[in-house]
Image (spheres, rainbow, N blue to C red):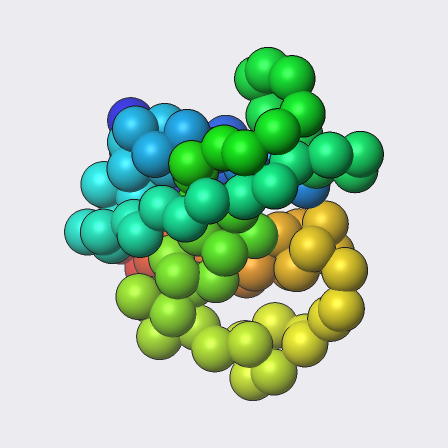
Length: 106
């Protein structure tokens, strides 16, 4: 998976908690190491299973990590927003634009 494919896949996980191995697969093209945590998952959060305690990585958290690894900082390269769905969208969007501009400069 290349970096553009990875960030586009990550952007699909609105309000998602990713299994550690899935998060790492998406982070690998960027050289980012994920740090899973324990989440109490209920209404409004998306996992591949029932509500309860889950080990994983918030999709929005991973998007911020990837953006920072490329020198794209919240509040500078993309807006500082509140909701986790919005955070995911703006961080992934900034990364995608950055990668596309790198390809054009080629």
